[in-house]
Image (cartoon, rainbow, N blue to C red; front, side, top):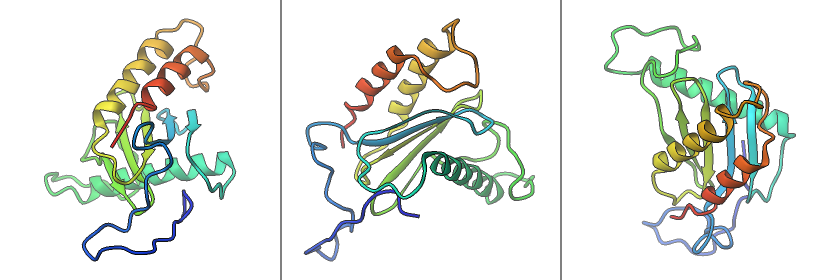
Length: 179
């Protein structure tokens, strides 16, 4: 599965990473490429992209694949957890916080940063592969979600986020993420 367009590398030192060059503006601006926010049932509450030169799937197919990837990775990490004496069947649903979890993984074209809240809200931030740990950034995005979405009396839980104030606050914060 290819999320982002490949790049042609003309010369790569043997010890260097095959990661592509940073997207335009990354050195002084945003490093975020895509954000997803899912509820515990797999409904995509928020989707926003900033740098995605190649679109290979329809948006709803992309969201289903992303949620399926997260479900599979969580199930797999819980299954191979060396500290747990009880291993559920591979693919069995896990409660939020149950079993071991992962925080990120990296390919040569992107890094997927992941956080799941105790209520089952899943935040996924795709960034440039050279981006550092984004757990604090995801926690801050989650605090914006709680403050401006969950506490909003006009918001119906489980419905896509349509309020522009919280989208703008979230986007302003995400665009400040650097290497």
